Every structure is written in structure tokens, then in C-alpha cells.
Image (tube, rainbow, N blue to C red; front, side, top):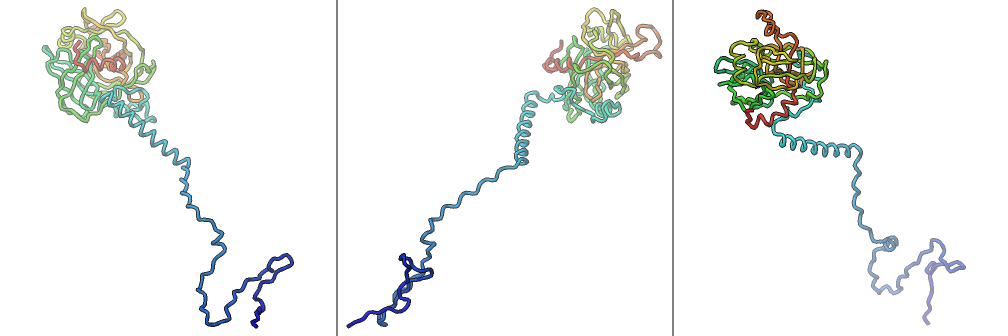
Amino acid sequence: MTESFRRSGEYESYDSYGNPYQGAQQQHVSPVNPEWPPPPVQPPVQPTALLAEPAAAAPAPKKRARGPLALLAAVAIVAAAIGGGTAYAFQELAGNDTAASSSTSTNVVPAGKKGDVATIAAAVSPSVVEVSATLSNGSSTGSGVIITSNGEIVTNNHVISGASSIKVTTSSGKSYTAKVVGTDSKKDLALIKLEGASGLKAATLGNSSGVQVGDTVVAIGSPEGLSGTVTSGIVSALNRDVTVSTDESQSQSQQGQGGGNGQWPFSFGGQQFNGDTGSSTTTYKAIQTDASLNPGNSGGALIDAAGNIIGINSAMYSASSSSGSGSSDAGSVGLGFAIPINTVKSDLATLRSGSTS
């Protein structure tokens, strides 16, 4: 009879509740018959592998939040791009007249040098020229202000009125031939254009509505052919009604025959100065200054403390014209008048259109 038997440790031990004792392990029993083939070798199964859940897809890396500095830099870049585009669009709409659209907020001279005559003169003198006109009965000498780099120049109408040819000399001594673009005798303004000019230094046109009595001013022009002459003073008064002649023959007569020492005749306060204004006249509001103005300053620049052009010098009183004194007594007595630059800017479109009123 065949007997079955168990070896020690062949079965697990259980407690009274039917649970295996700690550490008990089930043992595999090898067959007694050695002729049986051994079972195939199986890799050990890890319990944790059976219990583990499928691996979840790795989450996409979170985008790092931008710090305050990065955000500010991005905003600055966008603002600069928008601002640059706006400025470019404005220049495209306004043409090359950036100087004509400037205001008194512009500092042509460094803020620390504001009001310094030497600094103002150095900055603005390259933008002021001498204008020589050949007339049928003589010649006329005055000044002008460069307003574009390609040679547009504002001057007084009476400086070039009736001219058969015009020559302009810059502060560097270079000479150009100029042609009249447009004139406005009622405002005593003219626009001329240099032939073959480029790279000139245009003046910055300010805002004459911001000028106050007592403000420091500098005048630059070519009195008596002395180009680049600089004088200084203050604004003595505003909105002075100055009456000047609009008659070309009258102006040529005064200039050609030496009436009023070649100065443009004007009247003020019921009196006539520097010659007879004739019957055809026009009146405009002028800035009065005590900066010394003499024959040849007409058409030149009246400049504020920051280096902006606030007026075009147009008339000056000479004691010799009314007192009959000798030429040795001729000259400025501190009564000069300038056309406000806002009047000039408002007239530029008309002048550029070729008007000859």
C-alpha cells in the first residue's frame, strides 16, 4: 500500500484564526520521481508590478511666468515701436517740415546753457544766412533763416522784392544762387530756395505764443554786410502794430537811393520811420525787442533762450532817419521789431504754393 507523507516545513502553519504565521512561505515540492522533467524556469514576479497602475503621461512642462522686469521690458519695446511708428507717420504727413512744427519745449542748447548767448550763437548761427539781391536800380542786403536742409529760406519780402537775381552766403562762406518760391507782401514774408543745396542745418522754429515781456532774446543777421553778427537783449513788448510798405517801387526807391540808410520804411504810433512808407501799406502784430538791429538784420533770426526761432526781424528804428543827423549817429537805438514765428509757420503753405501776393 502506498503511503503519503509530509516533510517538515512542507505546509504553512496557521494561527487559530486561519491566518499564516508571519514570515511563513509556501514551499514548492519537487516530485519524488527524478525522471520527471524539471518545470520551466519562470522569472520571479514582483508583487509591486502587479499592483502598480499604468504610468500616466508625463505632464507638459509649465511655462515659466514672466517676472516683472521681463513684463516691463516687453511693454517698453511695444511702446517704443508704436511711438516710432507714430513719429514716422507724422513726418510722412508733415513732409520735411519738422523744424516748422517744433515748439518752445525743444532745447536747441543744453538745459544747463539756456540763456547763454555764446552757446545760442554757436548753435543757431549755421542756420542764418546773408541774402544779397540785385535790383534794377541798386541792391539790397538782408538776412534769412534756413528752415529745411535742402535750402528753403525764410526772409522778408522787402529784402528780395523786385530782385533780378539773389545770392545767398552761408555762415561757412559758401555761396548759392537762390530763386523766389513765394511771397506775401501783406506779412512782409518771402520764401526762397537755394539751387543745389543739401545737408544744411535747419533752424528750429519755436512758438511765439509762449513769449513773454522780459524774456531773453538773441538776434543774428548781417547788418551792413557783416554776416553772422550776434546781439542780445530782451522782449520789450508784444503785439505792436507795425505798418510797412507793400509797394515794390517804394521799397526799391528807399533801398536804391539810400532813404533811411537802406532800412525798410515803417510807421508806428502815427509816425513814419526810416523813410516814407507810401500809400500802399500793411500792418502786422510784431514782437518788440531792444536787441540791437541795424540795416541788414531784416529777415534774420530772433531767438529765445533755448535756441528756438521766435521771430523774423523786419524793422528797426534809426535816429538818423528822423532827426537828420549825420551817418555817424545812425544805428540801433533799441527799437526793433520782428514778425512772430507763428505768423511765419501759418504762412508757409501759401508761400510754398508759389503765391506772389
